[in-house]
Image (tube, helix red, strand yellow):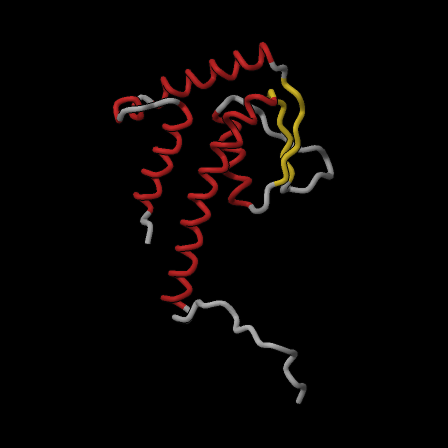
Amino acid sequence: MTSESQLREKLRKIEALFVGAGTAGERLAAEAALRRVRARVEELARHDPAIEQQFSLPDQWSRHLFLALCRRYGLRPFRYHRQRRNTVMVRASRGFVDKILLPEFTELERALQVYLHEVTLRVIREEIYEDTSDAQEVPDALPSN
Protein backbone atom coordinates (compact mmCIF):
# COMPACT_ATOMS: atom_id res chain seq x y z
CA MET A 1 0.00 0.00 0.00
CA THR A 2 1.30 3.43 -0.95
CA SER A 3 1.61 5.87 1.90
CA GLU A 4 1.10 9.58 1.46
CA SER A 5 4.82 10.24 1.90
CA GLN A 6 5.63 7.66 -0.79
CA LEU A 7 3.12 9.31 -3.11
CA ARG A 8 4.60 12.74 -2.45
CA GLU A 9 8.10 11.42 -3.21
CA LYS A 10 6.85 9.82 -6.42
CA LEU A 11 5.20 13.10 -7.45
CA ARG A 12 8.46 14.95 -6.80
CA LYS A 13 10.37 12.43 -8.93
CA ILE A 14 7.88 12.71 -11.77
CA GLU A 15 8.03 16.49 -11.60
CA ALA A 16 11.83 16.37 -11.53
CA LEU A 17 11.79 14.26 -14.68
CA PHE A 18 9.72 16.83 -16.55
CA VAL A 19 11.52 19.95 -15.35
CA GLY A 20 14.96 18.51 -16.04
CA ALA A 21 16.20 18.03 -12.47
CA GLY A 22 18.69 15.19 -12.28
CA THR A 23 19.90 15.25 -8.70
CA ALA A 24 18.37 15.58 -5.28
CA GLY A 25 19.91 19.06 -5.01
CA GLU A 26 18.12 20.18 -8.14
CA ARG A 27 14.83 18.78 -6.86
CA LEU A 28 15.24 20.86 -3.72
CA ALA A 29 15.75 23.90 -5.94
CA ALA A 30 12.21 23.62 -7.28
CA GLU A 31 11.87 27.34 -7.80
CA ALA A 32 14.87 27.42 -10.13
CA ALA A 33 13.47 24.45 -12.04
CA LEU A 34 10.12 26.16 -12.36
CA ARG A 35 11.83 29.26 -13.76
CA ARG A 36 13.54 27.07 -16.38
CA VAL A 37 10.23 25.54 -17.40
CA ARG A 38 8.56 28.94 -17.60
CA ALA A 39 11.43 30.17 -19.78
CA ARG A 40 10.89 27.15 -22.02
CA VAL A 41 7.18 27.99 -22.18
CA GLU A 42 8.04 31.53 -23.26
CA GLU A 43 10.45 30.21 -25.90
CA LEU A 44 7.85 27.82 -27.27
CA ALA A 45 5.35 30.67 -27.35
CA ARG A 46 7.68 32.70 -29.58
CA HIS A 47 7.77 29.91 -32.18
CA ASP A 48 4.38 28.37 -31.49
CA PRO A 49 1.70 30.96 -30.65
CA ALA A 50 -0.86 30.31 -27.96
CA ILE A 51 -4.18 28.95 -29.11
CA GLU A 52 -7.34 28.25 -27.20
CA GLN A 53 -7.60 24.57 -26.30
CA GLN A 54 -10.38 22.64 -24.62
CA PHE A 55 -9.89 19.77 -22.20
CA SER A 56 -12.52 17.47 -20.77
CA LEU A 57 -11.43 15.90 -17.50
CA PRO A 58 -13.05 12.71 -16.19
CA ASP A 59 -13.36 13.56 -12.49
CA GLN A 60 -12.84 16.29 -9.91
CA TRP A 61 -9.42 14.98 -8.86
CA SER A 62 -8.08 15.12 -12.42
CA ARG A 63 -9.58 18.58 -12.86
CA HIS A 64 -7.95 19.86 -9.65
CA LEU A 65 -4.58 18.46 -10.73
CA PHE A 66 -4.87 19.90 -14.24
CA LEU A 67 -5.86 23.33 -12.93
CA ALA A 68 -2.94 23.34 -10.49
CA LEU A 69 -0.45 22.40 -13.23
CA CYS A 70 -1.80 25.09 -15.53
CA ARG A 71 -1.55 27.73 -12.83
CA ARG A 72 1.94 26.63 -11.81
CA TYR A 73 3.10 27.22 -15.39
CA GLY A 74 1.52 30.65 -15.50
CA LEU A 75 -1.51 29.63 -17.57
CA ARG A 76 -4.98 30.91 -16.70
CA PRO A 77 -7.49 28.07 -17.03
CA PHE A 78 -11.11 29.09 -17.56
CA ARG A 79 -14.42 27.89 -18.93
CA TYR A 80 -17.14 29.68 -20.75
CA HIS A 81 -20.58 30.32 -19.32
CA ARG A 82 -22.71 27.17 -19.64
CA GLN A 83 -19.74 24.85 -20.12
CA ARG A 84 -19.68 21.83 -17.85
CA ARG A 85 -17.44 21.82 -14.80
CA ASN A 86 -15.31 19.04 -16.30
CA THR A 87 -14.43 21.31 -19.25
CA VAL A 88 -11.30 23.44 -18.92
CA MET A 89 -10.16 25.95 -21.50
CA VAL A 90 -6.53 27.08 -21.75
CA ARG A 91 -4.70 29.45 -24.06
CA ALA A 92 -1.29 27.88 -24.60
CA SER A 93 0.97 26.80 -27.42
CA ARG A 94 0.30 23.36 -28.82
CA GLY A 95 3.97 22.48 -28.38
CA PHE A 96 3.91 23.30 -24.67
CA VAL A 97 0.72 21.34 -24.13
CA ASP A 98 1.97 18.32 -26.11
CA LYS A 99 5.55 18.27 -24.81
CA ILE A 100 5.23 19.43 -21.21
CA LEU A 101 1.73 19.88 -19.80
CA LEU A 102 -0.05 16.72 -20.97
CA PRO A 103 2.84 14.26 -20.40
CA GLU A 104 3.37 15.60 -16.86
CA PHE A 105 -0.37 15.61 -16.18
CA THR A 106 -0.69 12.02 -17.42
CA GLU A 107 2.07 10.74 -15.13
CA LEU A 108 0.87 12.65 -12.09
CA GLU A 109 -2.75 11.66 -12.70
CA ARG A 110 -1.80 7.98 -12.96
CA ALA A 111 0.06 8.14 -9.62
CA LEU A 112 -2.81 9.97 -7.91
CA GLN A 113 -5.45 7.58 -9.29
CA VAL A 114 -3.53 4.57 -7.96
CA TYR A 115 -3.21 6.22 -4.57
CA LEU A 116 -6.88 7.24 -4.40
CA HIS A 117 -7.97 3.75 -5.44
CA GLU A 118 -5.84 2.15 -2.72
CA VAL A 119 -7.11 4.54 -0.04
CA THR A 120 -10.73 4.00 -1.07
CA LEU A 121 -10.44 0.21 -0.94
CA ARG A 122 -8.63 0.35 2.41
CA VAL A 123 -11.33 2.54 3.98
CA ILE A 124 -14.09 0.31 2.61
CA ARG A 125 -12.34 -2.83 3.89
CA GLU A 126 -11.69 -1.34 7.32
CA GLU A 127 -14.96 0.53 7.90
CA ILE A 128 -17.68 -1.12 5.81
CA TYR A 129 -16.89 -4.67 4.72
CA GLU A 130 -13.65 -6.57 4.10
CA ASP A 131 -14.64 -8.03 0.70
CA THR A 132 -13.93 -5.39 -1.95
CA SER A 133 -13.98 -7.77 -4.90
CA ASP A 134 -16.00 -7.00 -8.01
CA ALA A 135 -19.56 -8.27 -8.51
CA GLN A 136 -19.90 -11.91 -9.49
CA GLU A 137 -20.42 -12.53 -13.19
CA VAL A 138 -23.30 -14.89 -14.01
CA PRO A 139 -23.91 -16.59 -17.39
CA ASP A 140 -27.51 -15.47 -17.98
CA ALA A 141 -30.15 -13.32 -16.38
CA LEU A 142 -31.23 -14.50 -12.97
CA PRO A 143 -34.72 -16.03 -12.85
CA SER A 144 -37.41 -13.77 -11.48
CA ASN A 145 -39.16 -14.99 -8.34
